[in-house]
Amino acid sequence: MEAVRQIAKDIKERKLHPIYFLMGDEPYYIDKIAAYISEHVLTEEERGFNHMVLYGKETSVDEIVGNAKRFPMMAEHQVVIVKEAQELSRTIEKLVHYAENPQVSTVLVICYKYKKLDKRKKLYKAIKANGLLFESKKLYENQVADWIRRFLSGKGYSISPKASALLVEFLGTDLGKINNELEKLFLVTEKNTEITSELIEQHIGISKDFNNFELKKAIGERDVKKASRIINYFAQNPKENPFVVTVTLLNTFFTQLLQYHGLNDHSAKNVSSALGINPYFVGEFQTAARNYPMKKVSHIIGYLRELDLKGKGLGASNLSQGDLLKELLIKVF
Image 1 (spheres, one colour):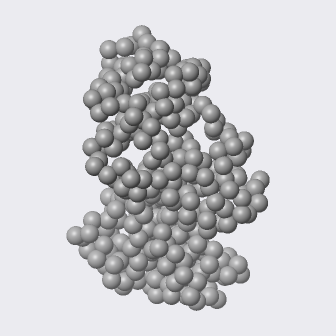
Image 2 (cartoon, one colour):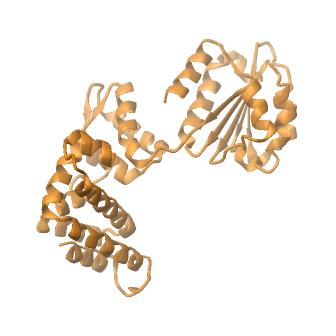
Image 3 (tube, one colour):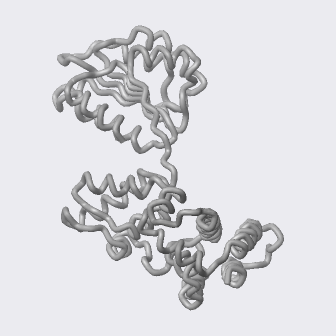
């Protein structure tokens, strides 16, 4: 993310702001920026007297301001970091008077996760004028695989499209969780290594053969035997393979397949752009389109919606997850 790199670059060059207000739905970048400030603004010797961490649940805006107005001891700056500041959302506007005239020797970092300031209010305008506002936006699912690729590239690794899709399927859009799992791989692999689905299975514990990614592929190819084996595995391991996740992923796949049928240009580049998928997966849609005409795809989407309701206990309270999965296959094939 270019904005994050610029913030880090400015801090390294000692172009510091008196207030860093970090907000938004993606906590990963908020934590990363706060940690970078914590580690790079002060030396080890300065940190003992000039570094303070407060928590939103245990503090107040008045206490934050009181600490921010202190002068540093034997250092140019002091750092005050307020974690979980969203807990102060009802009173955060009281920070406005400090934000209008902040202490230049203080670096105040507000970690305001899962929330945003109102742009129309005085606090937002004051921080924009005298500090730095950063909004950490949640990535869409179709953006995460590319984020993983760029993240690994920066660390000296590469990853296969199948492996990145596997990570996204099991870990979703939680960048912190993805980062933690990739850190495990860094411990056991050397740089310039390609991260494969085999490495992920071995060191993260995600099965490369029995997962929704492989189920989707088997259904697209009308490979009944393979799809049945995966469904049976899911039925035996329901906690690791929730029915609702399977139905949601298949619904996304067939909805995209419906879009594919509606395209005039079926070239890999156009399909990739129109469906928001990696070009590596275009072949799966080309195969599935041959196996499932548009009318059949529409019917399958209807079946999936019915099964989703049954999975939530509506009209099928006595059916196990295994039975619902088998019904799903019968409906699709």
